[in-house]
Amino acid sequence: MLADRRFSADSRLSGYPSVSVASSISRQHFRSFINMDDPEHSRLRRMLISSFTMRQMEALRAPIQSIVDGLIDDMLANGSSADLVRDFALPLHRW
Image 1: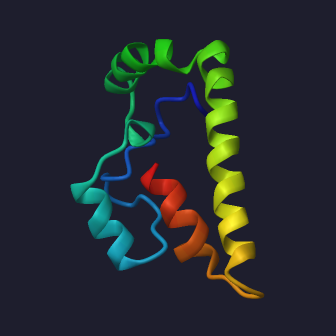
Image 2 (image 1 turned 30 degrees about the vertical axis):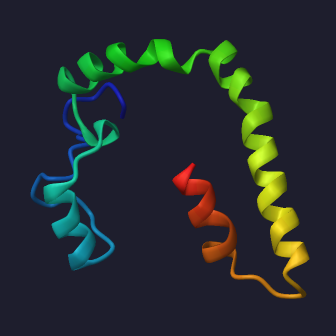
């Protein structure tokens, strides 16, 4: 399917499956290169690919692990309950 031009990743196209009206509207305004077809997808992918080498991803492992460990330590220090989104996912996303 990935090479078959009869299929499209372009979520703006009519008939593209949607989980809700809101997600359909959102896709019209916020594009991701993941939801693009060639040649636009390939052009952007070539620009980004050098930033995602194994070496560069491995270099991020320790800093990310440190951030995750700190967020978990903070949740544990704050008592027996935590809001996973508020206390973990959102702070991690801001990093």
